[in-house]
Length: 201
Image (cartoon, rainbow, N blue to C red):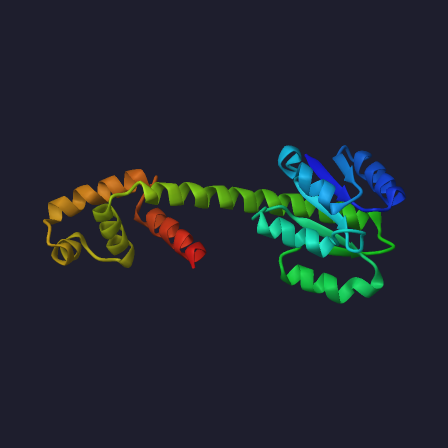
C-alpha cells in the first residue's frame, strides 16, 4: 500500500512521510505534480495527497490530469484558508477530501485510510465494468437482441414472436447469454445489464 505525497515544501513532505511511515504506510514523495504524473504508471499508488498551491501544476491541475487519465485514484487536497472555495469545487469534480492547514495528522491519516478503501471499491467496480463490456462484446447480434428482451421482462414466447424464431431457439439463446455473461440467474443478468447501461450514458 503506497501513498503518494505531492508538495513543493520539503519540510511538509518530511513531516507527512514520518507520520505515515509510523503507521506502517509506505510513502513516495514528489516536489511537483508533473514529477508525480511521470511516475504514476510505475508507482500505482492507492491514494494521492497533494498541496493545492504549488509552482507548475497546482493540485487542481493534478486532479484534472488524473481525471483525463481516467484514474480511479482518490485525491486528498491540502489547502490554505483562501483555497476553500477552490477545494469545495474540487470535491464536486471528484476529489475525495480536502484538509485545511495547519492540519491534524490524525484527521489526515483517517482520511487517507477511508480514501484507500473507497479507491479499492471504485477500482473493483471499474474492473467489473470492463469485464462486463468485454462479455457483451463477445455476444452475437442475435444473442444481444434476446438478452435485451429478456432484461425488458419478455417471456420466451414473446421474444420468439418479436424476433420470428421458435421459443425453443430463444431458450437456447438465453442459456448461451447467461453463460457468456457469467450470470447465475435472471436477476443477476438484469443487474449486470443495468450496471453497464448506467455507465454507458
